[in-house]
Amino acid sequence: MPLHLICCVKQVPDPETPAASFRVDPGAKRVLPAPGISPVISPFDEQAVEVALRIKDARPDTRVTVLCIGGDTARDVVRHGLAMGADAGMLIKDPTLEAMDAYQTAYVLSLAVQRLAPYDAIFCGRQSADFDQGLVGIGLAELLGIPALINGQNAEFIADATVRFERVFPDGIGVFEAATPVLTTYSQEVG
Image (cartoon, rainbow, N blue to C red; front, side):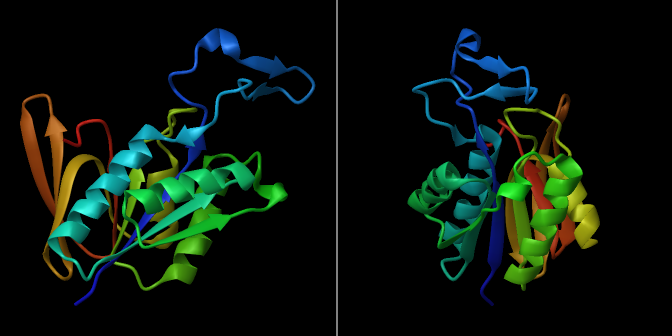
């Protein structure tokens, strides 16, 4: 049976940008993008897309959709996911969504995911590389009423309705299984 995997991605300032390049707009109380340096896909989200694409490699009938909230420049993040091998991309673009907190972001993503249903799994980075909160993925799982497996290094479908998930611990690797639909998050341990 074909699988549908949704990868939530975020556009962030390039983590390699020198801190001195950033400026703060005191009136808006927000950081301004560094001039001449394009934003990129959050590295943790890129890892999540990579794991989804590995599943697609093992099961070619799998469909991978990249989902992003952002402005015009966020199209590049969706294109990045498509260039990696995703089958479809969705950009939620609305000026009223620009300064959302983690809950609001999870809520908007939950509405989009429901429109993309049916799906078997959602893949997210463990946190975004800009605010490092790690709240959107687990908030999204809660809003959708599905289990969340966090901070993984790998996942695979061992049956159409079961995901095997590996997580690195200080003393070894933990292996978990969950019924689908499920949300999984990934960090730098993806190898």
